[in-house]
Length: 140
Image (tube, rainbow, N blue to C red; front, side, top):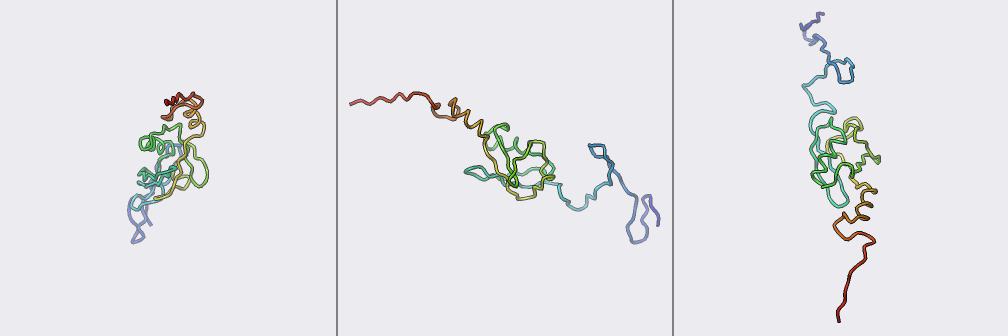
């Protein structure tokens, strides 16, 4: 059996190729011929209270990047968003493929309750602020 790039008979053995990961770990290079878990584009179904959004994103993206895309679709800023997957709120730095998000999986988008309350208190929700006196006049 020979290594170093030559194939040994029909077994298909050859030189082992290595890659250095960002964390500094030296690992055997992945076989890029087939689609493996955590690679390529996936579609995530994001549910808000009243709508569904199909978001196409790289499987190796994190929840912070998903929030940036959702901010364009929903007009909620990233700090106003809470994303839940499998019943748990996910942090911005968590990677989709590492927590098990696959193609066509569902993620729940909620507005941060503190931000929602602040909007209501200061009248940023489009209507009059809570506590603002109503100026209704009735003419007879």
